[in-house]
Structures are given as structure tokens and as C-alpha cells.
Length: 106
Image: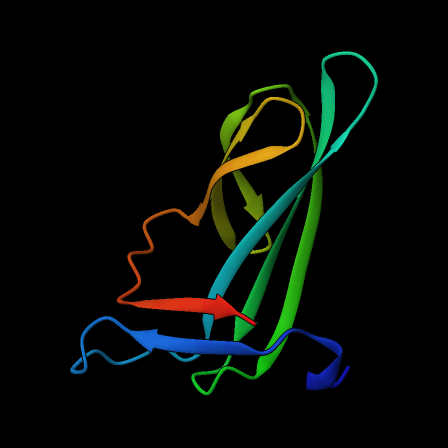
């Protein structure tokens, strides 16, 4: 696994006095439509060093109903995901994590 195998991250501090946690985690999710009212929800947590380099990726897939909103355990992280319709993600964040920075995928 090398850094070039993964997207580059740019960190933007909301407050110049803030300090980044090392390492820190960035959740993401996508939905795969299945037949009927069930879907597969795949949640990934990218664990990054303070400089934005990737440390590890934790991934887990769940069977969910359409329009599900719930908190899911992915590794040692609790991730809230709110889905809409068949494959849309409304919200995805780590529970109790209130980052003072934005992570932008290029």
C-alpha cells in the first residue's frame, strides 16, 4: 500500500490556532441498490496522519432498508450515516467527533 494508491487529502483548518489530532479519521459511504427494499451500505474510514498521509482504511458493509439512518460500528469507530432514496447519502460522520478542520478530497 502506497500513498499514490489513494486520493490526496488537503486539510483546511477552520481556526489557525487549532491542532490536528494525530492520527485522525475521515468517514465516507456509498449505497449499492439491491432488489426490493434492501440495499448494501459500505462505510469506509480513512485513518490519516496529521500531514494527510494515509495510515489505514477500515471498511465494512451492512444490509440496510431504503431511507435508513443509523449509527454503525466500523472498526473502533461509530459512524452515523443517513441515506435517502435508493443510493443517496445525506450525512456521514463519526459520532462525537467535532473536527475543527475540513478534509477536501482532490
